Amino acid sequence: MPAEVLRQPCDLAADLASDLAADLACDRALAAVRRVAFAPLRVGQVLAADGATVTVSGLSAAIGDLVELAGDGGPVPAEVIGFRSGELIALPLAAGTVRPAARVVHIGRADLVAVGAGLLGRVVDGWGQPIDGLGAMAAEGQWPRGGVPLAPLDRSDLCVPMWTGVRPIDTLLTLGRGQRVGLMAGSGVGKTALMQQLIMGAAADVVVVALLGERGREIAAFVHGMGAAARARAHVIAVPADDAPGMRVRGVERAFAVAEYWRSLGAHALLLVDSLTRVAHAQRQLGLAVGEPAGPRGYPASALAMIPRLVERAGNDGRTGGAVTAIMTVLADGDDLVGDPVVDAARGVMDGHIMLARSVAAGGRFPAIDVGHSLSRTMDGVAEPWHVAAAARFRADFARLELVRELRAMGAYVPGQDAAADRALALEGAMEALLRQDRHQSLPHEQSLAALQSEWAT
Image (cartoon, rainbow, N blue to C red; front, top):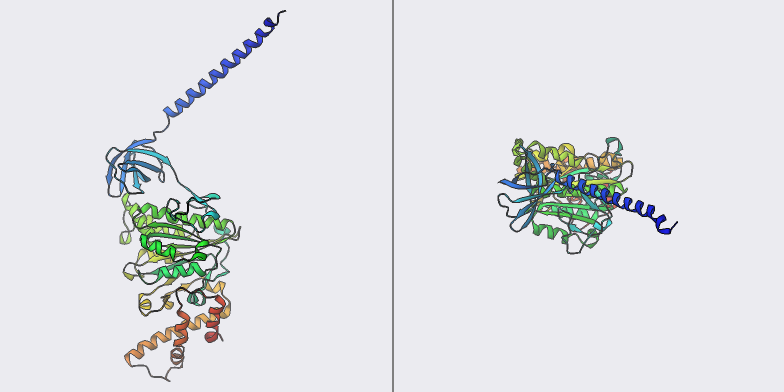
C-alpha cells in the first residue's frame, strides 16, 4: 500500500485536533468577553461635592477601597468612606480640582504595607513613598495595614524595664517593655525635644516614628535633629498638616504595621506617635462627613473608639518574644487635661501617662514633667523593690516641698516645726538636679538610679 494512503488517517486526526484546539480557544475567549461584559461596573462619575467629600454614582466599591477622580491637574486619589442610596461617599486624599461628572475609576485597595530592614533610616509619606531623596527602598515583605490581631492570652506580662536615657522617667516613672504610655501636654512645652531624647537613648532594637499633622518645617527640624546614630535605627512616617485627614489615619496605621512586623520577628520596637489627638481630629472629620452624630465636644463615636483600637495593637507577643512599646503624644486644647475627651479616652486604655506642665517649662526645667500628676502603672512590676520604695519617698518629699513653697511664699512657714517639711526643703537642690536634664543628653540608667539611691534609699 502506498505510503501516502497510510498518512491520510494521521493527517485527518491532526486536523481534527487542530480544529478542537481552535474551538476551545474560541470558547475561552468568548467566556472572557462575557465575564468582562457582565462584570460589576468599575467606572463612575462625580455626582456632587460637599465640603471635604465627593459623591460618586455608577460605581461599585467597598468602604476602604481607593478610587481615582479625573482632576484638571491630574488624577486625584480618594478613599471610599461610606455609601448612601447606591451612591459612594469618597474622601479625596490629595489636593486637586474636580469638576461635575468627572470620570471616577476603581483602583482597588492599599491594605498592605512594605516592611523590612530597608526601611530603617528612611523617611516616607502616608503612602509609604520615600520623601528623603535617597531613592527607592528595598522592602523584604508586606504586612496588613490594619494589623494582625494579638490574642489576649498570647500577650506576655510586662516584667522587663525599658530604660529611656531620661533620668526623671527612668527613676520615677520606670517604663516596661511593651507598655502603652501617653505623653500628655499642651503646645510648646517641650514634647518634641523629649521625643528626640527618647529616640536617642531608649533601649529598643528599632524605632518607628509617626509625625502626623505637624508643620512641614517641624518635620524637617525633627528629622535633622535626630542625629546619625538615632536615625540609622529609625523609620519615620511623616504626614504634614496640609495633607488630607484620611492620610493621618493611614499614616498611624502604617506606623503600627511596621512596628508589629518587627515584633513578629522577636525584636523590640519603640513606636512614637505624634500626635494621637490629630489622628482623632482626622477621624472626627471623616465621621462627621458621612453624617455620624457628634458626641462630646463634637467627637463622633468612631473617633473615640479608634483610640483603644490603636492602643491595643501595641504590647508584648508571648509567642515570639517581641514587643511594641508605644509612646503617644496627646495634645490638650488650651492645656485642659481634665475634660478633653481624647485625653480621657487615652488615659483610660493606656498603662500610664506622663504629664508635661507649662508652669514647669516656664520655670526653665527640661523635661517639664509634672511628677505629681504622672504615673507608670507598670513600675511596680518591672522595677526592683528598693527602687519602687525610693521613688515613693521622693514623691512624698516632692509633694511636701510644693506645700512648703506655698507656705514660704505666704510667710507662714516656720523652720523646726515639721521635720518632714524641713527634710523636703533641705533636699530641694537634690530633687531639682534629679528632675533636670539637658535635652541633648542621654544618661545610663545605672547613673540615674544611683542619684535616686543616694538620697532616698534606706
